[in-house]
Every structure is written in structure tokens, then in C-alpha cells.
Image 1 (cartoon, rainbow, N blue to C red):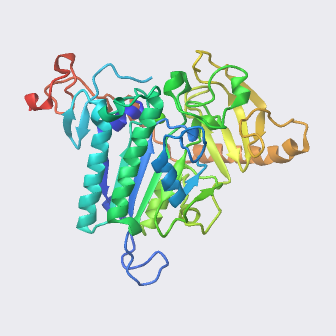
Image 2: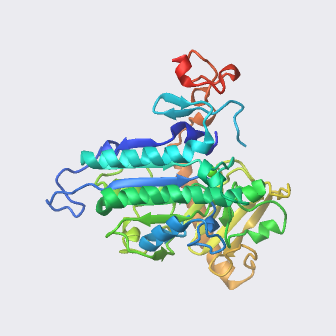
Image 3: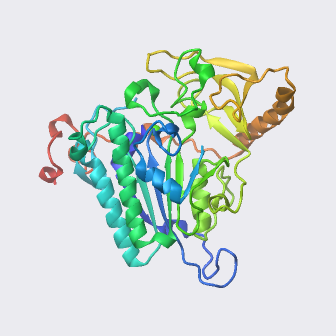
Length: 423
Ligand SMILES: [Ca+2]
């Protein structure tokens, strides 16, 4: 099921840091000495389908993100790296349905109110907190709140982007007023813009995937082209993260978990392999060591979903399979296998337009390293524990239609009625 639905179901997942404390070392600081270690607070804001080029700080064509741009100036930005259910979406707060169907015009206000309330009370409790805010922005349908609707916006996407930016700004203001010195605020996105939605999709910035576009289809969301998975990231922590720095280091959203675990002075569970790494040194300006390689699973445009047929190695990007997602003009790029792989040098070809000539010295030098890395990840997957559970299609994970069940009040007869009546 798509992220939009999950976001609305979850509204805000608020968790005290207890969950990250399973392997902590009481009394030891992160340096291993005996001074008391005050655990920091974490706020992770994950936007849906936001484009790398949507942030003014990344790509100057848009001016709809003044708060995120300011946060980037005060922190670090990074070059990190269909779906409507037929039932009305309920809005849960914990296990309680508080709206059904969800009112999208008031959703942003609720996100903000609940997040600010949480930060307020968690700060007062003097306990470390973790706030995960999974936004429905910038995914379609784009709906903005009443005050913004009154403005003469001709651009629904821009209005929605401003709404998200205002929300992030309010949350940052709350952090600044309560727990500024001890809180890491990490904003990022889940994947690139959904080009099929035309003017309701965001911008990939310069990551246009021209090789694919010249052969039809979109090179954004659902593809392994840069525009499909490169997301904007801003990390903010006053006094810890240097201000106004753009990091060229290759990072991944997978790094959030190991990084937060490390900053909480805890340890990752043993006997498991994690693809993410602790990047706190990069955030704090003490290290330039990120990922040498990243692997990009097929995400719906071409090939078997989840299989890895594209990878990044330093500045190089290799494709063993290409294919375009459905584009705004309705075209779909044909699936093509590449053996030997297409290899682009993103340092001088960020639009992925011209693959290296297979006879060039550069191609011949990098191919063996890419082949080895590709073989390595396939072996790693083959020898690791892989869960066969797929909750995305499990009826237990789908909003259902049983008015007698607390979590299933979604029969058509019950639409547009309040939960209160069926208590
Ligand atoms: Ca998404």
C-alpha cells in the first residue's frame, strides 16, 4: 500500500526514546568516559514524493520553501540520496479513528498542532524524545488549508509546498524555543516526484535522466534514475551541525536508523546486517566518509520489483536494466537489459545523458570495480536472512470494512459520518 495511506493512518508516530535504549551503556558517554551522557532528542520529518529540485536551496527555480532554505543555512543540506484505495481513508490517532474520511484541508494543521504539542510536553518531561512525522505532502491529492486557498495561487503544487514548508518552520521554531541545543531535526523525502501527475508533481532539478527521456517514459519516481531516488535533505542541530554547509558525501535514508542509535549512545542489535551506516561524523563536519556504493532496487518502472539492477559507485552510476515510468505525456520507456552495463559519470553528467563509451579507458577501468561491487551485494542478499513477510498485501494491514470493528469502519454507509456516532 502506498505511503500516502500509511501516513494518514499514522498521522504522527510519537515514541519516546525507550525503543532505542535496548543496548545502551548507562553512565558512559559516547567517548567511553564516565561523564553523564545526556541523550539528545530526534525529530525526523519525511516528505512524500518531494523532488530534489523543490527546495529553493537546491534548485533556485522555486521560491516556495523559505523555512527549509533558512534551516539549510543554519544547518547542513545533503545530496542524499496507484494508489488510492476504494474506501475512504480513516485518520487514526493511536488506535482511535478521529476522522473518516480524513479531511485533507485540515491535515497540515493537525500535523503541526500534534507535533508541537508533543515537543512541548516531551521537553517539559525532561526525557529524551523521538518524533517521526510522516507527511502526506507532497503526494497527490494536493489540498491546502483554507488561508492558503484564499490566496491567488495558480500553482497548487507551489501552494502545497509552501504549506509543508510553513509546517516545518513552525516545528523548527518550537524546537528553537524549547530544546534547541539538544535536538537533531532531520528533514528528507522518500523518493522523487511522480511525473505522471504533470503539474501536480515536483521538480527533479538537474537530475533529468535524459538518456531515458530521449527514449520515452519518465525518469523520476519508480525508476532508478537519479530523479527517482535522489531526495533533498536538511539536517539541523544548533551547535553540533555546522551552519550553511552542503555536503557532497553520498548518504542514504538507510543511515537515519544507525545514526540515531549511535547518537542515543545505544548499539545496533547484534547478528544482523545493516545497509545504513552511522553518519553522525559527516553531519558534525568531522568526517567525509559516506557510502562508496549504493544499490538501487527496481521500484516499479522496469524489472522485477525489489531486484537490484542499478548501482552507484563513487561518482559512477551503472545500469544493468533501464526503463521509464509512465510520463506526463502517457509514454512508458521500454525495458532494456544492458550487458555490459551502461555507466554514467555523474560528476560531469548529472542528467545521465551520455553513458561512457565501453571502449574508453575510463569505462574499462571502472567496470571491474562495479562488477565486483554488484556481485558482492547479490551475494550479501543471497546469504542474509530475508523475511518473506509481505504486510503490504496482508488483509490485516489494510483498512477494512467491518463497522463492528474499531479499526474497520469504512463501509460506504458510514462515510462522512463521525466516529462519535459509532462508539
Ligand atoms: Ca513516495
